[in-house]
Image 1 (cartoon, one colour):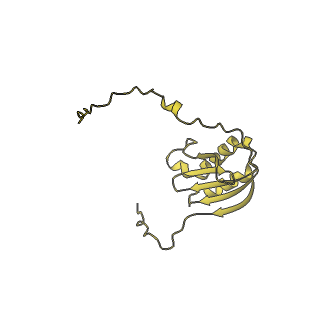
Image 2: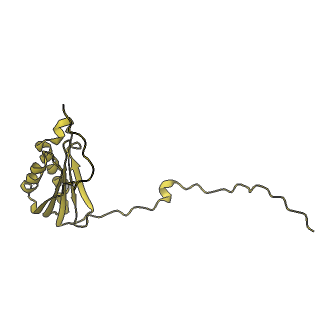
Image 3: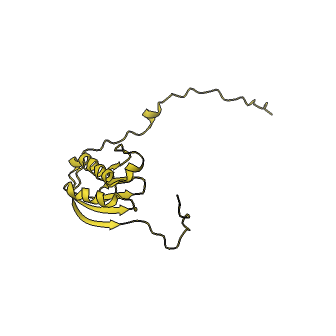
Length: 148
């Protein structure tokens, strides 16, 4: 009967150190995209106004918000802040070639009408406006009314 072999811990093997950036799959650089028709999502809350432009499939082309534009506190929810947010966003996506947009408005903030008016004034052809504000059908009980 042969003698039992001794089990020894394995010798540490040298592993080539690969930087995390080199190990990651390289991202494909997107070229200039031409989009003739798109969607504009306006989220107007009591505290801020956020505007997002997407193509027809939902891929985001650009976005902007009143807070990003430099408005602070209660000035973020004003119609003027919504107008300048839309103006900034349309200028940044001007090279995409966007002409026709469908507008989806969510929320009850004061910037919703001003944002839609600004879209029309900046030369975009608005094909439809849809209100997608979530409305509960007797779901959760709402919080009690704030009294100041």
